[in-house]
Image (cartoon, rainbow, N blue to C red; front, side, top):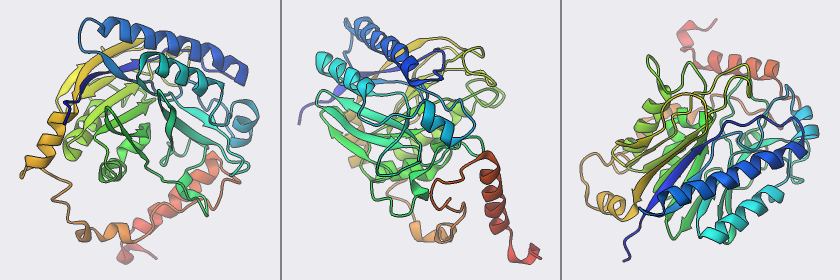
Amino acid sequence: MDHIRYAAAACQTDLPNPVERRQMAANTDRMLWMIDQALAGAAPFLPVRLVVFPEFAHAAPVFATAQELMEQLAVPIPNEHTDRIAAKAREHGIYVQTGTFLESDPRWPGVVFNTTCLVGPAGILYRYRKVNPWIPYEVHASPHDLPGYDEPLFPVAETEIGRLGCAICYDWLFPEAMRQLTANGAEVLIRVSAYMDPWGATEPMDWWTLVNRCRALENTAYVVAANQGASLRHYPPYSWPGGSMVLDFDGRILAQASPGPGERIVVAPIDVSALRHERETRVGHHMLAHLRTEAYPVYGARRYPPARGAAGLSYEANVARIGDAKAALRPASLVG
């Protein structure tokens, strides 16, 4: 078997957030330029084969309602931006995890998804729609909540650089999401994220680093995590700390951008052959093999209730549903 070793580049952006579709082209222009720079910088060393961008690099949910997002920013996939990225992937023979789009799909009228795509030399390999929106603020839909939704929630792509799977930002606060990607075969877990202060990339919290390291070690998987580096003026009301990073399958940080807003590119090696050897030969600390699934009845009962479609998605509706889920968590002895 060929040895699979290459470099991955996490590219964080500091771009103005579009308020209409035509403004998205400038963001894509900058990302294509960053791809060229990432490859040029690594050329004398280990070649870059995977490039990852953050959540909202193409467009952020800057409006308060799903209807406004649909009217101003939502785009179908594929689109002109994914076409341009696919052309760049063919030019260089690389794989690109796009920043996220606000996506519309004629199969789901009135629904807005937060979506990222893995694009290779042959085009789009999968699209991942955020399963866990950052509620109550995010009013785009989770595919989990749509009756009759029939596409894989956690797709994994088999590629010449390994099996790749992605989830978006808040998804990573749910270990179950990464566990499912790993169970579906993922060897490289990709995080496209817009993770803000004060939870970001510095102490005393530093949830960003903590969560990325935990997901790597508990799934014996590489992690390539690109975080939003937008300054406050580009994406209020939060500041975005960057800290984009690459980690190995034991949770070691292989490379990390210095915390703080601004464009950054960090590059580190991915050795898929070493990962496969570890997964095959390890007996200890093989958490997926050690998982006693039937020991956790918490998953036998519904917690956060589906929205029963996308109609009526709003901050207030999300707060109400969170209240229902919290009530369901109370022990029976405390209810009444």
